[in-house]
Length: 132
Image (cartoon, rainbow, N blue to C red; front, side, top):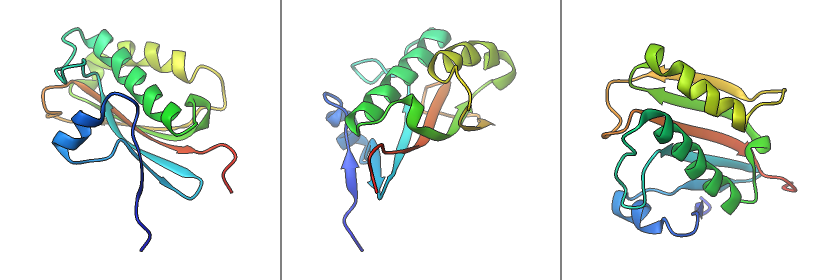
């Protein structure tokens, strides 16, 4: 089996080392991004929900950029929400900023009861531009 090709955004390696996972794995022309949360520099959750979602998308953008991707390269999205009915509007607003133009990526939203102190998490699969 080939060794995993791990991708890390600049400046956040300590977070991934502490928790023992990669920000993303490149496999052929696909990028599998681990769930991104709205963590501040110290790793703690952003307390304001809408800001937590924006920060999760910024953290996701940093991982995509580290692999040479943008939101336009995302083909599949899974989001996790601690209170989907209440949170939908705030998530939708940020989502439309990132994925505002059709065709939209696939999207699956899942209600959960625990996200390690966070209220929102997003993971994606992207096609890496210029890959064969």
